[in-house]
Image (cartoon, rainbow, N blue to C red; front, top):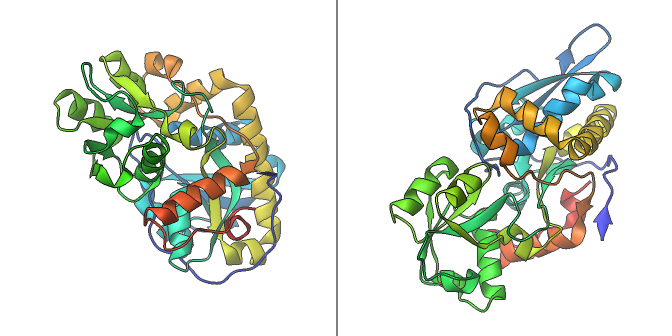
Length: 328
């Protein structure tokens, strides 16, 4: 079942805590912005917290194309160095909306925080071996598939998040023991070196660092997003429940502009690669060959359920989340 992004005017009340973003950080940024206020004449200023990664290209493209101004919004994009600042930024009112992976928002909701997605962000390509992320092993490794990861040390960018949750799921699906894996935290930019230096047996890496690891002789043994579900949505834009209920018009405008941005990005991959160079340190040659995520308006509820059930099964969440509570 797929869910079209229609702004929901449902209310909620509680605020939130920390989360962790998905993607491949390639530059640093920081700072927060004031919440919605006066902008250009006739425009309402709206702040959006993002991470400087490829996944967030649509919001930059949409701003450049004027989709937000068409909705009467002056978009103020604020970058954070990672996901840890994203949820608190939304909760405190520093960001009106923000980008994060699905598991991070599920975790926040699981802790009783009133957050909800208003727009999709990035999804798997759905193609094994040609996805934005994968589990990589060095040349000569005896690890041939996901089940062989049992008993090995595998790096992820953050523990108890979307990386280890999806990897455990595909290991079990492949007939291996998901509890037999030792996960360690290694930032994506450092993962290829950790792999080459044999600090880990395998590394979960996202683009553009995935392409680098493969170029250096690594082999992708599991496209964990795709293997969990070829329709898996990885991240999206979210806000507080009281923003959705108390600022319904603002939420609808942001969602419409974001949806246009996602559709435009999917239809113009060359412009995605170009604009990524304006807010990251990814060089032109790497941008030209890296695999891009799929950008789409719809969330896939079945894939959401698969991810949420796995997060509950492996202890990341206390219980499986409800799509109605989290998706638009």
